[in-house]
Image (cartoon, rainbow, N blue to C red):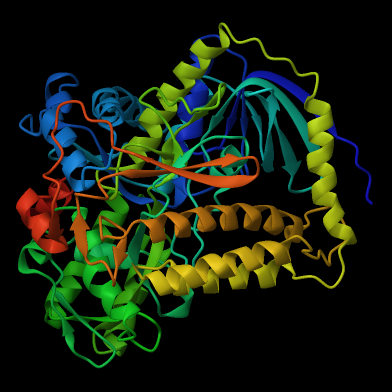
Length: 615
């Protein structure tokens, strides 16, 4: 076996795992409270991961923007209570109301502070009513780095967290792996804040591709409970041309009223969504759910295009399309500071591509976000002392369907996690005596993969994981498909016990990194499939062919997975209710329920109003 010597040992009060928005705000909050903080990031802090790949907006309530921060363009009628109640309703009532209240009450301050970081970094966000800032991921990255410039925090970059360390039932640190030189690092810490994002087990990738479930799976193995893993958000994604496959450019189309289109299945038949859901497409993030309901169903039933998606046929005249693209190009300069581009997509070339293809675009659904994750309370505590979680790796706010802004989630939860972790370590007594032994065992387990022969490779395992997920855990599910997926996931897990590493060097060995991440993606997928099988209904982002109704009588319940004695234990509980009553315990048609509850938080309205007014 290769040398099993820990390369270095580091000590800190609070270890923050993740270099995106949640990690940065957590680290800054703890540092301001006088704590010794270390950020561990897979890439460069503020310049890697999914944070810099986003392209859209983040918001607060208009009431706070107008009265507290003096933003006269804000709409004060867009109140905190409106946001609060909409998140509960649009989440199909599965969110924990204390966590939602924390999101609404505490987000304005940190959101506004991030906009100030952005201004001081020279990239002021573009504001529009009701209280929304439009921006690019690179601008968010610059804002975060400005925050760290003003409140410096120690960083350990290009290193992957591998496993958490424990002192009895308490967290005592983590083991990290240096991607470039293969060195293993033991980090002793009184508390750990997990800010690592979600997971993505499917073959169609969109711009948010760095979703490997590392933090979720590590927390699970350390005893943390996970919840609602069956709810996964898919987003419209370009299928061709090949050089922009995976781009979420189609979302710029459907959210902009300057574009008019219809969706066609593989036989050229129009897919017709409910008229109301179609009408709010340019106003609400609920449109993402609408796309899954109708376009995802066509694809899942085998009625998709040869590329596995649907065809968008634009109904605009040539002049109108040119006009719409001119607006996007102008906005790319004013909003995203990348003239003519949207997240690396050359808008002029995209317009030319449409001209050459009868104004038709092949569009699929790529996994953008995972709603489920580490179960937290409204202070970002997990059930494991010393472990806190924030952002997409956590669960509690969005219930069965993500609305509002994931970027607000990461900022506000990161900030609160840093504060709560700082309060925790004031009275925490953590013994690092057994950390070295645990770290040695973790490292030996990874290095033993070099000795395996004739087993599945990391590339083969990744392909198999994605094939299983595509078939059984996609937009629409069934008992038969989930049973098959669970069985095949278990078989893959056994194969991966003998995963074979062909590259025998330690310097930038992508196979080692890939095998670490695959283990975590598989763990998350197994739990998601088990929870999806149990949920015999259609709710939010979980839809079943065999159980098409919402069942508020039997399934208005959260699923919770905890690792006990090496086995998955599933329990259930009602969402925590404070002041908004749950719906009646009855079964309802899925779309009828949406319409009756008047869902559709219209937090994108300002963007689209500006588009129509300017043109």
